[in-house]
Image (cartoon, rainbow, N blue to C red; front, side, top):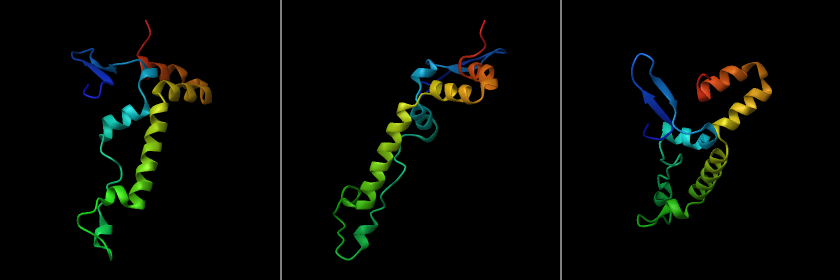
Length: 112
């Protein structure tokens, strides 16, 4: 739909299916579809109230806490973008072979 992950089909046999192949949908795509693209950490600029603080300073750029959190978020997003939902399904299938049929059905739908 809006995030380009699912398509919908209306009607009695309708439902949802993947809009792209599972190997083309990253875990980050799913997270962003659910949570949105806003940063996880939002600098509140509390350093401006500290001794020597300035209302004009851009503390989101100069605050070491903000920089550390931004670096962590970039690393987190990079890792999520490298992992596809197909890769997760394959890992589940290797670990739990009995789950293969339901995992495949969940990702690609029934095979004809």
